[in-house]
Length: 114
Length: 221
Image (cartoon, rainbow over all chains, first blue to last red; front, side, top):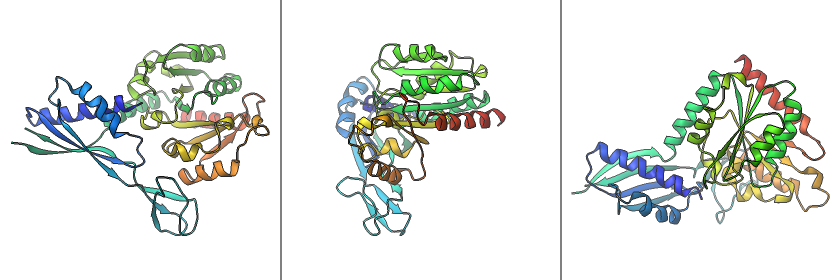
């Protein structure tokens, strides 16, 4: 549900950087989203056209790069990933003490302008 | 001709900036603040009412209540002894830093010791929007089930205290406390946890003591 607010934030950032670079039009946005970020691509796309109508972003393509979640076990020190998208204890030593190394990213990496 | 422009900016940067400004305002007033999050019906307003019974004896308290509509929660907080401000989010599923900033303008921050922000009932969206409060508190409740940390990891990861409410219902509901706590530990090791019942009052004292200690710390800082 918070994709509306998020899509507005994405458009604001893109337009600000586009205007700074004297863009006539923004054609592409490259977003980086960690697997643990609660953002749904489809919902962002849905709001995108509504929000960017009449802006330099109108009609721009959204590209999503998904970053897989990675964990570091605090007991045995090994790294592991999500098991079927589910949070699970360390597959090597079964400890549930871990830290998240990546997967929480959520930023606008770059834009293409003309 | 297209040209590639490097941006590398966090999508939440505008909200994060406003949250930092809220934090600065609250710090200047030495006002300790809590952002209370939970699913609908977990007992956010009940916890606030129960905590106020004790806390209002020693402290001046403001409550900001976020809801999609109505002022029922703010009315309850006011009835319980807080100076209450209602935020109607107009359909938004969370309070953001901008809404909190507007609500803060309605309060004379220097005259309070504690600010309770009651977020919109939701386990997904509020996790993404920082407000600038000192501590984020999550209320889980027994009837919701023991699988919530596994289903809503983002929410459990970023909180500073966890309340497990409605423990008086444990004999009647299937809830595996060990399984629940294992999920919590994975996401947030060493998270301070308060099992309570707002109905019987069990466990409330430990929670109120924790809040009081933080209020005192912030007063002298």
